[in-house]
Length: 175
Image 1 (cartoon, rainbow, N blue to C red):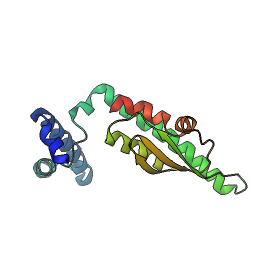
Image 2 (cartoon, rainbow, N blue to C red; image 1 turned 180 degrees about the vertical axis):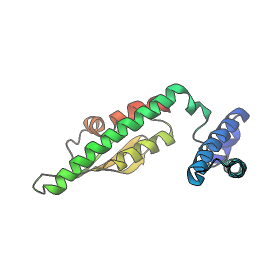
Image 3 (cartoon, one colour; image 1 turned 90 degrees about the vertical axis):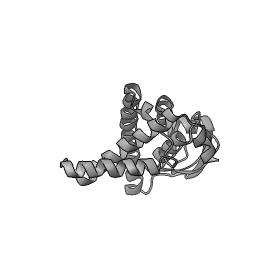
């Protein structure tokens, strides 16, 4: 099924995805080698190009359109929003740990998302899981099942607003 999808892509889309993977892998290479020596750059360019070429069927979520300035701005905005949510939730969980008398009400809530791409759903699920106090249990089509340390509501719309709305708004602009 996945190979049929890949075969339907145009040559330009495949090349765009190849270059996106190549750029990403080259950044990883530079991060690990921490060197701009010509011989290391040459080896890095060759190896990352080879890996990108051989793995192009595996990495088909993003292309060069992700580097559009508006999308880059939204990616940076997402990172800031995520970090703020991460700090808030860390402080909340730390407060609960240090004050065991605080009531907790663990439970599982569900809500629907407007995201259509699997990669965007994966980013949302990981963002929810990485913020302490919430854990993505399952995603079925467009429905997320989340374990919440303090279930404030079981209403799907209200749970969505509390847990995921801020992330989804930005992800819709990126993907």
